[in-house]
Image (cartoon, rainbow, N blue to C red; front, side):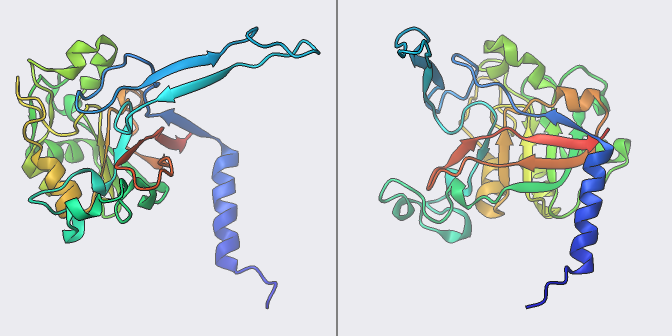
Length: 281
């Protein structure tokens, strides 16, 4: 067995280390998990408590420790949808029978444990900047023309394997809670045609600053989710929701290294995540 390091591997490693040594900015795209934060009403809520606090038990040497307990759905806060999350006409991605796949209380084939850690080219498509508004209106449908217009305005192209993040500006309402959910107003998001456009570009994953990625009609809730069908069921494209894209947009960073690692929960339909955008300093 040769001990010689392949030149390509060495050069690649040196290049990566050089980039890190030169300095990078890391922009956090995830929401802080807090009890009471806004989330889809279709999922169990996040809840955090301290079963033991400092002083509840003190050791002989004066030391004390606190600990935590959380209960949560997997689709709360910033999270990723595994391909097991949605089915259509009884079938999941790849034609897998959705009912049979769930027998045993876990999804062996398409669970979140099957999502590999991501380190990919990321692209931000800033729709409010294109439309010259603070944020898209409730129920606004982000069209193919909007997606293509954002690409042209920013001078970027969407390539196969990319992670494409679509900013609606609705994330600025997150701290309000009720307004962010948009029960009466609706929530802006990508149209079915827009999802098909993204699929045609063979992206690896998509994300948005809203609770459902796609448009929610005023007073319509989650009654119809065609973009989920197009992306998850028909094309095997992951969806990341409730992202914080404001700092990334404010920095004018439209291309970056996207980093995401789901929790390795066997058979789960999704996972809370803390995605990062990494850019040269």
